[in-house]
Image (cartoon, rainbow, N blue to C red):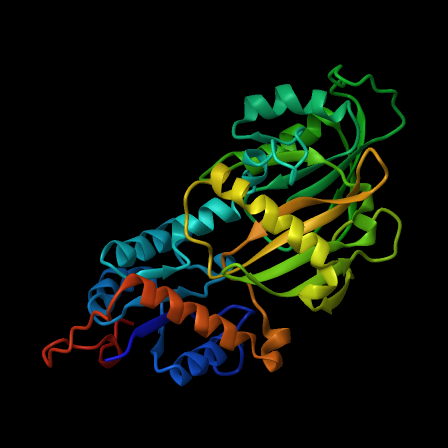
Length: 366
């Protein structure tokens, strides 16, 4: 008997196609079936959690999570508890929630700040007191970018500039210092006094998984952010995302007007070679983990002291990375092969084939 895999989705959301699924869900399923893997879809609801665990364990060998955190009913914590329950019962998680938290959390950058991937003046604020005491000094060295741990598409990512004030590096700025702040979601600008901005930013620190990462602004972001999309450790394409050509723009999201160019990995060989060289340190700093199934690494151009180009890591993404623009190039087949490889590494298929086991598809929990 072959392996069985379930693709987990949630109902609704702007990422759904006319069939009610993400556009990449059915192509992945069809590619898995072509390899002899029995694949199906299940929708997650918080009130179905226990029944879904009972239903899937012993029937499936692995799960593929394809849920945008912004669409999750009941919150991310309950959903991750559900995925952990499946993994603890022996199902292969693709990706396991701990992988998503490790890679997806913005403070992954802080853990890598002593590598060649991330500047060493990169900090994390986990509480309001540290935010208030440290950021005024950090800002004295020049423009900064604050990144909230939650949100998506540039929400809560702020470029912070001092307006018309002399600064002394290392000397905390007064709370009445005027700031110009640009949010990445749409490049809109707001003016704050430093004290008011710190109070405004408390919302990003308070609550579950609350955190702000503070890193140096990279002026060469105007040349574009470079995103590597990987299946496991295989780069499948590179997106060059150039911000809109308007004053102050630094956001690389489509919503903000950024222009996207899709390239073969070979065109960015120097960047990919550098990332592969440094990846051993990523493992060392972030822990011994399995690589996410579908994920991205985002980079910005920077300049070394000798004038040569280098790249700075901006973030990882792995919760629910889409690739619909490349379905016609067969990337879903690369995903399916990677899934099968992971199932095979985990051992023989585990199957409950008893006639008594009632399938969730035959029941209604609505």
